[in-house]
Image 1 (tube, one colour):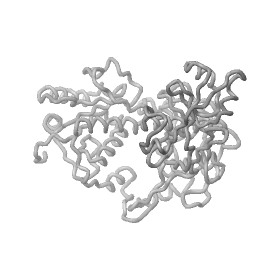
Image 2 (image 1 turned 180 degrees about the horizontal axis):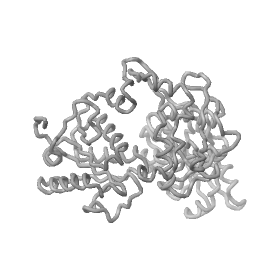
Image 3 (image 1 turned 90 degrees about the horizontal axis):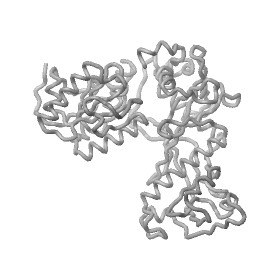
Image 4 (image 1 turned 30 degrees about the horizontal axis):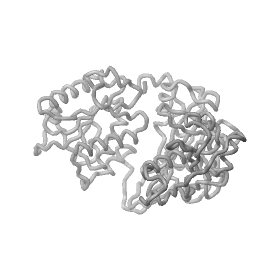
Length: 466
């Protein structure tokens, strides 16, 4: 039965391949709903108060303001997706709707040679990270004035039950939520600038092994390092000279500086880069291995070593000792799995590192698989039944190991300069709690390292995950 509604063009319609891309579509729908947008897809009948159309063509033609098409290698070959795209193209032309269709790519599909002329549109990539893609999508929505209803209530309890079983519920009881943020406790106040007896295009070659982060700005070499640090990388006859420094805090406040053209947003970008680079250098120094993603970002993982293998002790969010593994082995697939972390710096009002979790696979316990498609297929098979408790605990034991149990974690940015991080993630107070049913409570209480999908056979995933 079709609902009687006033024709307002406020709907964000998400077209995707079912069931292939249900997981992503559910995530995207939820994020958009929480941001206050009116969303419809065939997986969103979970929040309560959703409108439902018997006539999809009517929904797209008369009520949709943005039509999102989720593109993968196979999605546009699905008859249902093709039909919805045809409706969207017809509506866009008939109603003269600018920027109506927004293509997004969530896998390694090419941006070129896409059907329906999508290659000529501004495709938003989600394959380098769903959060990054979502941020770009919201920017597009704001630019195009897509209507929002931030005060609309969402039945999150119904959504949770749909994902975890009917026994799970949401109750009004205060609880603690663990973030994936590490607070930056302190950092050097001055950025130092040097004039070097080198051409700027020679900096990278000469300083490729420099142990501290740096960048080149307006022919100057800039870092937190002192003059003696610089001299160690130069020949005796190459004498660097210091030029005026830049006070970071004053610059961020908009106060006059020695570099008036080096604006505060540029300073923030450089600080983000340098602190992320300091994290990478520190992880390498501590013996972690690097997985370089297609985006150029790096995630670090512990190798299969006696020091890190097996279950490791760590204090949980209540300070009680627990055990958790960061490395495992699948005999069926003959691969090791490793929990890995990518660090992204957010330098602003509350400087922090955001720690993005990944799972990396190796055949020798050290070197990531070179086949990215196999890596993706294995990741989806291994992690599909990993609950939030597991991800949270792996993050906690990871941080406990790299900080060696200390309260703070120091990143070297000069021989006598440090960026100091909290070694435990920030905690938030939540006014509600999730209450698990008895079956789920038992799973969480048991050894979660054994309650995972690690016994699947890789070739069994071809139809489901390829």
